[in-house]
Length: 162
Ligand code: SME
Image (cartoon, rainbow, N blue to C red; front, side, top):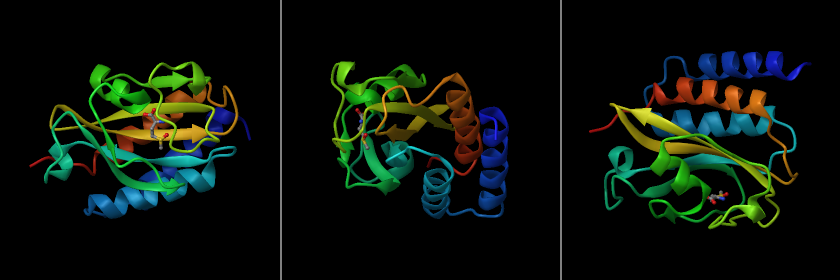
């Protein structure tokens, strides 16, 4: 199937999977499972969230690990650190073809070679990121980026801040 059509299917599946759920942690857990299952050549899919969603001891500009699929990952990411911290700080999707060339990249899984990080919003704030890693260089193109951004828009409807 052509990539753009494929993404339309994934987006529809995600919307129907999340329909009717109001428990964000369950929704994010299932969303990471669906994306991991749907995407080829991907070794990590998951979420990092700020204190606006998580509360507790996490700062509003700090990231802590949320639901994910893949290898054990770092639990906290400081503002501006790594691809995730930069995407959060800039409120901008970062598509990195070669993570080894990204200054400050945090290697959770040494197999990861390319990565896309999409910011998530709630209540007018950027409150987390969706992170997808691949063991291949330049795995993600502009169609994949747009597909993941569309998925992020579906997922962030589930997030609220206190
Ligand atoms: N590589 C990310 C860290 C998270 S892991 O890839 C799961 C980064 O540089 O922010």
